[in-house]
Image (cartoon, rainbow, N blue to C red; front, side, top):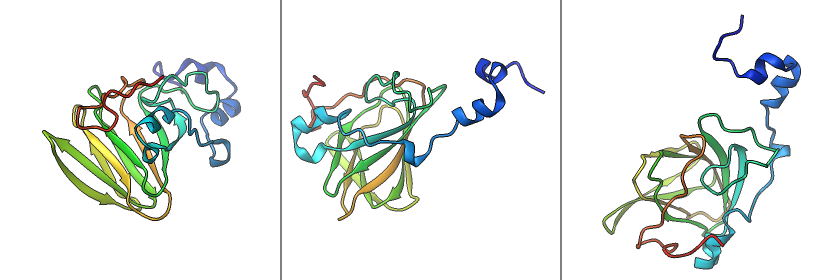
Length: 173
């Protein structure tokens, strides 16, 4: 029995094809080093790759990326952060963001009024940062860090970079 809340494509598409459209494999993903490439203007340590699965997060408009599942209520990607690499201090004003470490270690910073508290997360550790709270990331290990990034909305607003962020004033173009 189907319900009225089921997506239209579920009701109209062959069930085998529909099921296959919901699955994304590791082999079908790619590391997109360009989507956040503008951040390298603030230093090479900000170079990192996004590996998209559901939606595109707040990194830009990737709606035409046929390798992803369109977001219906959240975004999910992996981030690859080389040793010494950083995700600069930024704030998502509209949505919470979660980081779940799969490989390596990531130092997460939570910022307020010039103060920062850091914690090092490792394999299967997670932090959920509420909307409006500035956060940063740094790979403090000697191997690549791979972690999941989950953002709790279909299409988040672009983050802002406070004056204390190395990205403050850096433009996307």
